[in-house]
Image 1: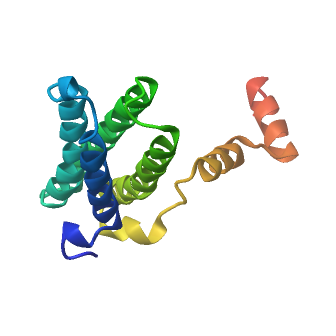
Image 2: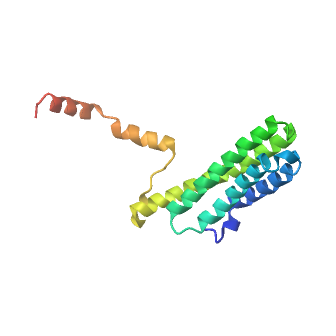
Image 3: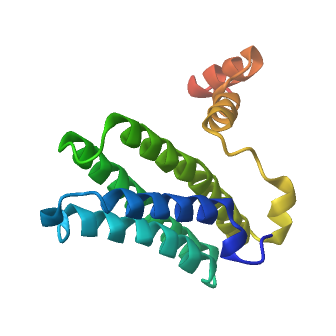
Length: 167
C-alpha cells in the first residue's frame, strides 16, 4: 500500500491537470475572472484535495466518499472546459489536450475507487472472506447469476414433479 497520497498516480495526474487548468485560465477574458475562471480553478483544486483528504480518513467508506467527490469535481471540470471551448476561450488543440488530461485522471481515479470499494466489502465480510472473493466485474456477476439459475434436465424434472404435488 502507498505510504502517502503523494505517491498515488491519481494524485500526480490530477496535480498536473490543475497546473494545466491554471495556466489555461490565465488567458481567459478578464470579465470571466470571477465566473468561469474561478469556478474551474475551484473544481480542479477540489479534485486534488479530495484525493488527498480521502486517503487521510479512517475507514474505506470515508475514503470512498472523498474519492466520489473528486470524481464529481472532475466531471465539473470537464463540463466547464466544454463551455470554455464553446465560448471560444480555448482553441481546439488546447481543448483536445485538456480533455486528454481529464481522461488521464479519470481512469486511475476510477480504479482507485474500485480498489477502495473492494477493500470496504472485504472489511464488511471479515478477513477470512478475503481469500474467497469472487470476481467483481459485470461479466463475472452475470456469469455467476446465470450459473445459479441454470437448471439441468434432472433439476427441471424434479421441480415439475414437486410443482404437481408428486413426492
